Image (cartoon, rainbow, N blue to C red; front, side, top):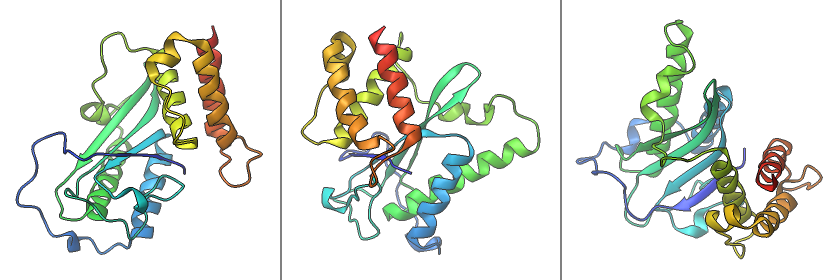
Length: 213
C-alpha cells in the first residue's frame, strides 16, 4: 500500500498529558504497519494520508515512516483515508497522541480500526455507521470535483516534490489538472515496475476524466 506523508509540526487539538509509555504495545513496527494496512484494506480504504512531526529523511519512498524514523517535538500521528458509502466517498480521520512514541500511536489507530470493524460483525450497524464519529468535517460545497482535484494534487506532489500545483489551480485550469495527472500517472502507471499501482492509476484516471468535463 502506497500512502502520502505530510509533516504535522503542530498537533491540531489539545495534547494528551501525561502520555502512556510506548512499551505498552509489544508489536514490532513491521507488525504494526502490516496490521494497519490490513485494517484499511478490509474496509476498502484508499487515498491514505499519514501526518506526523517526523524528520523528513525518515520517510520511505512508499510514504510510510521508516522503523528508525524520529519525531521532532511531538509523537502524535493523524491518519486519514477515504471509504465509499451509500452516500458517496467519505473521508475518515483518526488521530492519536496517547503514547510517548509515534509507533505506539500508530498502533493505537490500528487497534481502533480493528475494534470498529468488530462492531459491524454483530449486525447492529448499517452503511458503516460505526465510523460516523470519525468522519472528517468538510467545507460546505465540497463535492466530487474537489475530491478529484485533491487526489491529483496530493499524488502529483508524491510523485515529484517539484510539482506543487494547488487544488485551486487544478479546479480552475484544465491544463493544470492535466499536468498534475501526467506527473502522478507516470508514478502509478501499472507498467512502472517500482511504484505502479493499478488501483491508484484507475482513481487518477477517473479524477482527470471528471475534471475535464
